[in-house]
Structure formats: structure tokens, C-alpha cells
Image 1: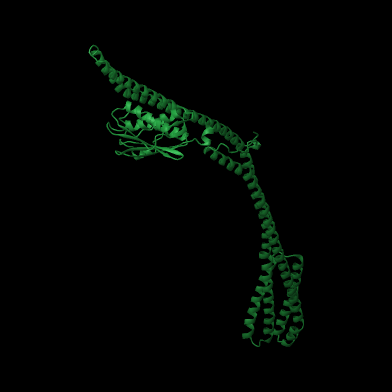
Image 2: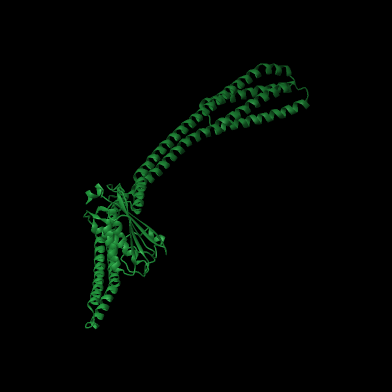
Length: 519
């Protein structure tokens, strides 16, 4: 960057230009005011004193003329002496006024008129002195005649010349006043023009500063604030110039690119973290499912294995004395225990498989009453201490659906009712034919479901807050809800803690066209 392109140089240059402009306007104003001051000095030092002195001369000379007449009319010495003293005073005053007038600068015309006046006044005073001599010699008549003739003529000549001098001084003073007014107007307008030009130049300088410095800085500040607020789409301008602001703008562009890269990295890391969290949650659910599976398997297998072991030991001890009928009975119980284990294993594996993948419907027509009866019979064998009562309003109801999945659905519902009911507490299974759909109700008198848990009843891996001592996977009702929805049905749960639970399932007899198209 060249030094002439730097903002420091440009601002310094503008400041010096403004300073020079101020000095120039000030010097011009002083120059114009000095001319105005000279004219003012002429008025105050020449024309005003001249006018004042001329006025004094006019007054003194007219007073002297009047005293001259009084002298001629005086009859005794008591009247003459004061008049003589007054004449002497007027002579001194006139002489002083002449001295003051002569000390003032005058033009040639004024000087000529003043010389004429002075010469004429001297001639007039000579005539007055001769008249006073005549009076002293007693020739008052001749003195009076001279007063009316030669003295008057001489005085009038001096008075006229003094009047002309007065007019000339007044005219010159008026001309000086006019020049002073013109000088003031000219100075006023010239100074105003200079100030206006200076103001325009300052406005241009300020506009340049705003356009080249202030506005780019404001834009850059706004861009940096938006970048700080993670707005990386902001457009940063002024990067092509060769100023300090452009260098800052280019640095901001680098910062913007780094911010974009950082946000992309953060988004990538957040995405990876989200995937890791999902994977961790999946692994945790899987581990929990495995633990629950092992717990359920251990719990469910314990009773049938105990039965098998007990009957086997009994048969071993009585092998020589056991009757055929007793042998058949014990073998039947062993087979029942094995069926229970097989059913539990198959049910657990099927539930786990269906929960991990959305099941595909394989619809067929079957008897739902027969399916419910089969489910009840299996659970009677699996849970011999829980009475299961069937209450079917009809003996046969044909529906279309996936028989295997619906068998799993009602097996899960009935298994929950048996599991969460005390031994000896009955579980009822009812079915109603409602024209275009069938309603199945499974009711128990078990521990019930707390109201806060009912909202999350069908969530995967969710278990009630009051079943911590009972093994389970948390996927049974999730699977039930999913399969019922796939059949276009609905499921409702009514429950109270300590009262029991009623599960109501509505299934259409025929799958809808949209469900068949989705298969």
C-alpha cells in the first residue's frame, strides 16, 4: 500500500487543508476589515474633528461680529472693558480652533478654502482694529459707517468662505461615510462568500471522510457484529481498495471463512455426536433388552425346569414301583413344562424380532375366536395358578389379517395381565361382533397402571413406575400398538392403581384398500 493511499495521510491532508482554509479566510477577513478600519479612522480622525472645528469657527466668528457691534454701541468704560476682554477671549478661541483645524489632514480644496478664510479673517480683524482706534479718538460715526460697509463686506466674505469650507467638509465627510458603508457591504459579502466557500469545502471534506472512512468503518463494524452473532452469510465490502480499512476488511473475510469452516466443523461434530448418542442409546437399549431377556428367561424357565427336575427325580426314585398311569401323568406334566419353556422362548424371540423391524403383514382369513381360545389355552398351561376366563358373545368371527402377528398381540396382552396380577386373581377375555369390526377386551384385577405412565404406555422400552420388581422388556405393548395400527385398528387402556387394567382392541374384519396397497 502506497503511503498516499493510507487513511492517516488522507485525514492529515484534509486537516491541513481545512487549517489552511481557516487561515486564508481569516487573513482575507482581516484584510477586508483593515480597509474598513482605515475608512473608519478617516471618519473619526478627520471628518468628525473637522466638522467640529468648522462649527466652532462659525460660532466664534459670528460671536465676534456681534461683540464688534456691541463695542461700537458702548458709551462708557464700564461697558467697553468687558467687551474688550470678550474680544480677546474670542481671538484666542478662534486661534485655537485654527490650530486644531490645521493639525487635521485635509485635501487641497479644503486647504485652499481654509487659506482664503484665514486671509479674509485677518483683513476683517485689521478693519475692526482701525474702527476701535476711531472710537478711541472719538470718531464713532466714522467707525459705525465702516461697520456697516467695509467691515460688513469683509466679514461676509470670510463668513461665506467659511460656509463654503463647511459645505466642503460636510460633503467630504458624507463621501467618507458612503465609502465606509460601501466598504462594510463589500467586506460583509466578501467574508460571507469566503465563509460559504469554506463551508462548501469543509462539507466536501466531511462527505469524503464519510464516504471513504466513516461509512466503510460502520459497514465493517456491522459485518463484524453479525459475524460475532454467527451470521456467516454477511457480505463484506471494500476489500479491493488499498487503505487500512480494506486491509481490515480482508482480515474480516479471512475471519469469515474461518468462522464458516468452524461452523461446518461444529455441525459435523454435532452430527457425529448425535450419531454417537443415538448409537450409544441403541447399545444401551440393546444391553437393557438383553438383560431383561436374560432376566425374563431365567424367571420364566425357573418354574418349568423345577417341575421337570422334580418329576424326573421322583420317577428316578420310583422307577421300580411307579405305575403306568402315574408315569403317563408325570410325563404329561414334564411335556407341559417343556411346552411352557418353548412358548416363552418363542414369544420372547418373536417379540424381540418384531420390535426391531416393522412387521410385514401376511393377511389371510381366519377365526379370531379360535385364535383367542388358543391363546387362552396356552397361557393356562404356562400360568396354571391364574384363572383365565373366556367370554365370547359369538362362537365364530371371521376376519382378515395376519394371524401370526395377531396371535402375538393377544398373547402379549394376556401375558401382561397374568404377569401383573397376583396368583389366584382371574383374567377375563371377551369378544364382541360389531358388524364391520370385532372388539376384544382383556381385563384383570392386577396392580394397575399409574396415571402418569399411561401417556407413555406404548413407547418402546418404557415400563411403569410400579413394576420395578417384575421382569419385562418394555417392548410388549409397543409391539401390540404397532401391529394393531398396521391392521387399521385401535387400542385403548383403562386402568387404576390397585384396581386393575382393561385393554380394549378394535379390529376391522376386512383390511382397508390403503392397508392392502401398503402390504
